[in-house]
Length: 338
Length: 240
Image 1 (tube, chains in turn yellow, brown):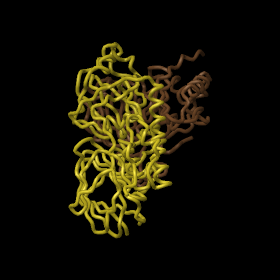
Image 2 (cartoon, helix red, strand yellow; image 1 turned 30 degrees about the horizontal axis):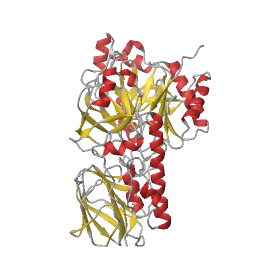
Image 3 (cartoon, chains in turn blue, green; image 1 turned 180 degrees about the horizontal axis):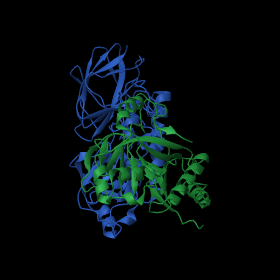
Image 4 (cartoon, one colour; image 1 turned 180 degrees about the vertical axis):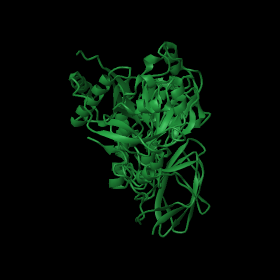
């Protein structure tokens, strides 16, 4: 049987896909890729539909051995050094992993999350509509846990395809993270709301798939204090506990919380903050809600072009995509290498 | 009855919270659940899922498919309708072993209120609670209906972990915990019931709006009930 055998893993390594929907009302957050564009890109490079399950590396890497047949793979997102039997191969480009070969992926030098996709995906059971690991719930992934040495991921035999490649995805390390103020910006002093836009925060080491804690100036709550009757959170909620240090809630977050949320990271910039490493600066830029919707539509167009063009034609992307500056995540060189 | 005004609070481009009020109030929760039912039955483009809480309903949205103006109009129309009767769809009897190692704070809570542990158990098991929110962690059921005579602020120092199935109180709230987690609430007992059990059908036992009755249970029955629950039996019985 065609299989990828895990020899070693470092960092937070798990199977992730587009996540599960419909269970937040039962306290189960969606999980899914922390950088959805990177997941889509890796899948596109190997001809998978968007949202196919892939291996997510969070500030980590791993060593694997391919057995029982060849596999067609690609890695996208944070740039990682890749070696097959000691020979370097580029990321953001599809490659063949032959039976018997050893694949080594190093932790990224920049950014946080990288995605290893395999043509046809990995065969693990779907749980509540998704294969994504939700670590806290012990559900999805491989029997409810992350990837560990000894785990075997089976997959279908796939014909060799064209070695599609794409320019490395920009990580926007210096760009501001755009937010829409609210839902509880009125629980803070006007000075705190101004400070959110003006101050420079630092990504702390207390950062995982549940939430990203930021260091920096404290954001003061108004006279109402820092407790609210619990209400729902979203991926991107900037919640501020009593100490005033913001936490950006992410894919595996708690679904409800009793701290006010001063702002919400817009959907297209979730990857921007997810890819920020501990110690790196974070600035927030409030934008109008309408602009957030417009950016989301641009991103959807980018994603549609990614999958449609490559999957149907298997040849170079249209000039339209190459020329468009899509939400600052322009993909300018998706092409079949001659 | 005049319905208080709702507030529509956008959470970025992927969610909208409909806030009925800012306090714990069964009438507000009834309106939350009524709007939830109406929106789920209606055809709302871009509506991905809904999360009812004590006093608000959050709509998770596909920012590309949603029409914000149309959605806000639909919400205001639905929310203006009165909430239906508050009779729960179903009521569960949930066995609880109180005190001792199962509820390490029972004696402290009793002492704080000048009650006997037996009285705390009787007061805690007397009401028919309502599930007003399932959230925080998978299957955590937050309940309305605690006797105000038992209300007690949370511990100043949270515990780093509390066991799965913990039955606790915090402030005026009561909780059925599903999985082990840190908590600053007062632990009165444990239930063998798995509110959340991957691999069981259904994975989640309770729904917002369900009624809950606690049934004090002999510790001698724990092992058998716990085994049955682990094997996928509900152990909690719906009584209507």
